[in-house]
Length: 259
Image (tube, rainbow, N blue to C red; front, side):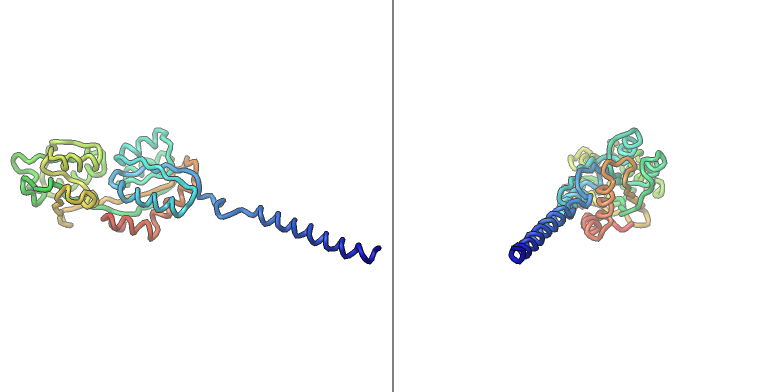
């Protein structure tokens, strides 16, 4: 009897061991447990709308289970909201000064410049006042739209005017660059100071008048993971993606320049 049952017992033990091994394997964490899932909210300058929307779609495709929600607006307004306690995970500003305010308040530890931008004059497609330079903005009857001075695009416009030695009283003062561009597109004004990237995104809806480098200025864009992020792993992954070759290519295609 022993000669018959001993091999059977051995076989049963092997089968039981195999089952135990299978259970251990099934309990191994999959790649979906890497931490790059869930939802993050990204506060970003309005001039980043097109590029970041594309980057967000690409990022979510590369990180199944993740969701990126954007809030675009004036960098100054977004910074103020963050300092006052708004819930967000990432901040991308169109000016270092607004990011500096967020860092100083302890809402971000540090930031990194990821792109830069320059100004351009936008006019309606027919360029009714035949604008060819900053000086032409001072011509009789020329109506100009500017961002408010607290917005990065408004601060940049003031720098350009100071460098050119001119003064402009705007016919329209808008909260951010997108609304400034919209006023130009509608024909309510004859020209506006926006970013190169905004003119490019508008296509045939506006005519762009280049501002020479010697008369132009540069706006640096910093990005940071926020201190109180509810999903810091995903937030950091998004920041890394923006700075990656794939993210930078989308930004360059939109007209942004290296920082």
